[in-house]
Length: 284
Image (cartoon, rainbow, N blue to C red):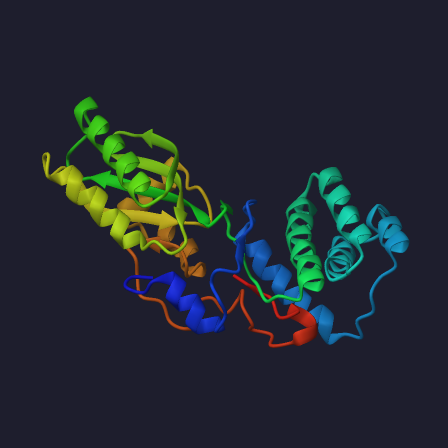
């Protein structure tokens, strides 16, 4: 979001207290999250009946059951009030070594949310992203680049690292990793959800450029995935083929932050408007 504070956005969107929220630590691929929500909707359009835990365990480990069948079993378990269902998902996630590992991780998140809601009967916002987060902070992958024809010197690197660390600390963020390349730098960091990314970018770039005007205003920011070096180079060169995949993720911003429409998060909030489905909890 460019000008809009995300705290205010969610408060207005959900009309719930933003103080009661949880960011899941584990990052889940966005395609998996979208598929999970769509299959969940389809699943509840059927005649849903809570699955027996013992039967579910047997079927999950039965090699004759298809991947789709197992995905539906995990969805069913995630909506059970029985803590044994949670433990079964947890065990299966540990044993999985394929695509179902992420699916079971997402089911585990949903199960935890469902059990917490059933015990407290309190509405809560649950936030799941591609890179995860911690506490009140989302994890981001950022890329800052030098201006045209400039290669980072040791002096440049020292300034950039210092300003990134200083700015993130100033806004209660956390620097997890900084990696320099010839003319760009990647940053993995945690940023409080209520802090404007624009504010952080502007602060870093302004402070760096006071000492040489060597930083470009091109910034890549995403909380969906860590981008490899080759793709970053193509994006900075505005290669349409490199940028195209990110158009599927409206919360991934390339070359600065763009304005969002009200429907940007509909994949993950009350798109389905089904009380049995979302148990009064909301997902992003």
